[in-house]
Image 1 (cartoon, helix red, strand yellow):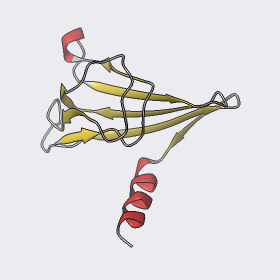
Image 2 (cartoon, rainbow, N blue to C red):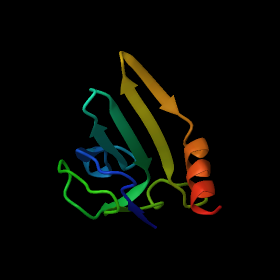
Image 3 (cartoon, helix red, strand yellow):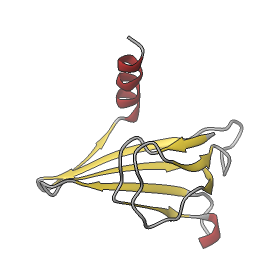
Image 4 (cartoon, one colour):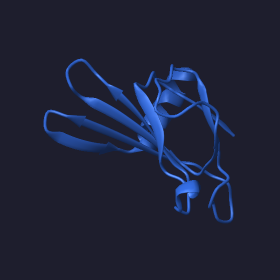
Length: 107
C-alpha cells in the first residue's frame, strides 16, 4: 500500500526505524501554522520511504509503502493525529477524522 501526504508538511521523518535498531518503522509529518500551532500525523509499519526525509512534503505526494513491517497476522497501518496549540497537546481519534473524510468524499 502506498501512503500519500493528506496535507503539506513542513518536515517529515522516521522517528523509529528498523535500521536504527527499533522493531518497526514509524513516520511523522509535521505542519507548523502561522499561529504557532503544529499538526502531527504519524503512520506506523512503513516498508520503504519513497522521498527523502527531513524535507518539505507537498499534499498528495506519495511518501511511503506501508503495512508490512511487524504487522502480526494481518497487514495494517496505524495512524496518529496530534495537535499542539495554546499550551495544550491533543491526540485525536483517527477513525473519527478518516470517517468524516470518507463521508465528505462520498456523499
